[in-house]
Image (tube, rainbow, N blue to C red):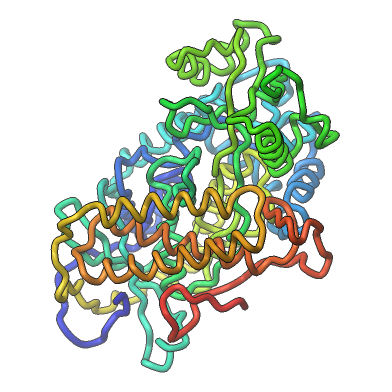
Length: 555
Ligand code: SIN
């Protein structure tokens, strides 16, 4: 399906030095740097701005102030990661953080300033941080970063951004049949569905997955529609080693309103004094954690889940009414305006909130340079599992990870440019339509889409048990098999690509969750409520060779 054949029909196709799949902060930062080395194509499946970055409200965590230290940031990240962070990676990211934030400022990102702090920046605080260290642009930090990067990308001649182009699968070059059985090999680009509905071949010397996360696997999520785990699914199908996919972070506070789709209420609201209260207006976090409302996300989300279940409540509430009105409006303009549209004045009314799927801490395993286990394939941002987040990402460490690793991956490519640039483009077979036909009933897609997301929400959520996980596996496996058959029977479409990917990613989350027989960080299993020292290691797996396409092999 996606292997390069060394003989056979050859079609004219597009070549570039760097193929970057995804246009969030990771993809664009990497594009801007490698544009100095060679030609770059960024493909993005909707509009260039549609990314999780664009929705990020909180900001980017880094040690910018004299009152903070790298030791503090490292320690907070390790505590949040619950024993699974790679300390070398944490130290490297924390160390490079301030430099990367200064790069963003130099590019033109307008972080809010504060002359009273030694950093000159208005630093925010979020859950799990012992200090104020989150550089922000009010509550639209991601949008501001995305805007700045896109502006620079547009002014760079060697970067071409293709909107409405969806990667279907990676092109994997294997030396011979024997190797093909062992999987691995070398990535030579991707098959890409263009806006006319044709599948084109994009050949590249370096292919980089920056497709963001997997939030759309769940019924309720803070993520944008593009977050269907495409990079993870493609990497798995190509045989890459994956890690830690049981660690799905649920953001504690997504707006609960029938008309609001995926609207996040930033953790920075709690950082500025917001308090979680029950329907009677009583604060409840102190019952669960001594850090109260600024405990790490896993702890806050579980507490809310418990409160809602015990009281049979549809939501809990966030109270910021005790803060100065003008301060709230100025600090959180996006949240203020959006809530007002729904009839909630956050300066004098409680905000109804529920937890929602927010961030995938696992993903395609990479080394400290962003390299995956497949030669020629990099993964950056939420798609990657670099070792920074461990079992629970510290708030606002993700934008940081994206910029630090984009720079690291660039440094690697620059250092090895002589050998990368002389790689020949392999001959690649054009996409085969076979006996596929046009899909006549969209319901085949929509029904399964809905079923998977409900199963994941109800059976593979914040608090899990083995029985529900096993049921989820049974149901999702059956759906996955049906969808794989549809994928063969019908012409490929964007909806089909995404459905196929969420089905596979769901299965990988379930398999990983069943594999970890303990509770740790974001993975809470009632059958095994404690962490076990001997299990303080990553869940690493890959596609099992020769089996049906969703079978995993733990390594
Ligand atoms: C938020 O603003 O609460 C989200 C920030 C993050 O997920 O890091």
